[in-house]
Length: 141
Length: 300
Image (tube, rainbow over the protein chains, first blue to last red):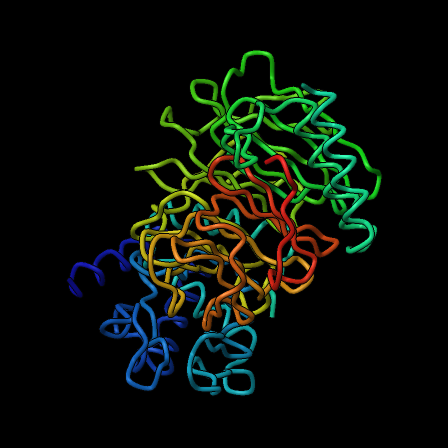
C-alpha cells in the first residue's frame, strides 16, 4: 500500500510545475519530520482513529482519501496546524493536535498542506479547492 | 362543527389566560384556531387524527406545522395562522424545513425539493443532483441563509448551498439513521456547525464538514424527533419511545424531560424560546420552560 501511495504521490508531483514540485517536496520533508510520528509516514493515521482511545481522546486521523483532511478549506487547515486542535468531546483538555506556530513558518505550513493535497483523489482535490475559494468561514470555536 | 370548535377554543383560552402568560395563551389560541381552519374533526380524546409530519421553527418566533398534505405558518406574536399553499403539482408532502431567514423547503414524492423565499407565495424547484429516491427529511443550516440538507433514505445526506440549485452528496449519514436530523451552530466545530441525526439507537453527531459521525452518549432507543434551542445551541432535545430527553452539552449527558405524551414525532424550538411537540394522532403541545412542563393545545 505504501509503495503504491508513494508512486501515486510521485506521479502527482511530476505533473506539477517546477516551483510547485519544490514546494511539495519541501512539504513532504516537513511532514515526515513533524507529522508522520502521529499521522503515519504515508498519512494513514493512527489505528482505530475513529474511536476515542483509553484517555478518551480521538487518535490522529489519516490525511489520505479515507480521512477527512480533504474536506477542509486551506484556511481551516492552516489554522489547525498553526493553532492546534482538540475534539471538543475529548475527555482531556489538552490539544491533541499540537500548535505549530513558532515551530513552522507560514510558508512551511503552506508547504505541508501542498504536500497533503497530493495524497488525495482528483475529486477530493477539486472539492477542497472549491471549499477554499468560498468566503472565509472560520471554525465556530 | 367549525363554529363549535372555535367556541370551544375560545372557552379554552379564556380559562387559560388566567393561568398562563399572555404569550402562551396566544399560542394555544392559535393552534386551536388552526384546528378550526383546516384539520380533521377530533376524536373523543381530542385528537385530530391528522398526522403531523413536521414542525419547524420559522422566521422570528413562528413555526411551520405540516401534515401530509398541508402547511400552516403559525405566528404567535402576530396572532395569525396562514395556510401555506404548496406548489400546485404537489399532492403530498414527505419533508419540510424552514429557517429564521424566511426560507421554506418542501420535499414531495415524485417532484423532489422545492424552495420558497416569500413565505410560500411562490415556489421554485431545486433538484439538480438529487437522486430519484424519496427525500425523507430536510434541515436548514443554522446560520447560512440558503444552505439546506436533504436525507435520501438508502443513499445519504445531500447539501445545497448559497442559493445554487445543485446538490452534492456529502456522505451516507450515520449508521442506523432513521431520517430526522438538524443543523446546530453549537461552538467547537472545525467547520461552521454540527449535524445531529436520529438513529435506531440514540443520536449521532458530526461537525458539518462530515468528518466523522459519532454516537452521542447515553441516549438509547430509536429517536423519532429532535431539535435544539437556537438561543443555546448546545441544548438538544430528543424524543424516543421512553419520552422526551434534554441535553445541555451537545449530547454528552441527557436528562429526562417531562413527557407530554408517550409518542412524540416532531419537535421544534423557536427563536423566542417556545418548544413545540407534535404527538402521534395530531396533538400539539407547547412548552415555554425548556420541556419542564407542557400545555396541550386542546383539540389536537
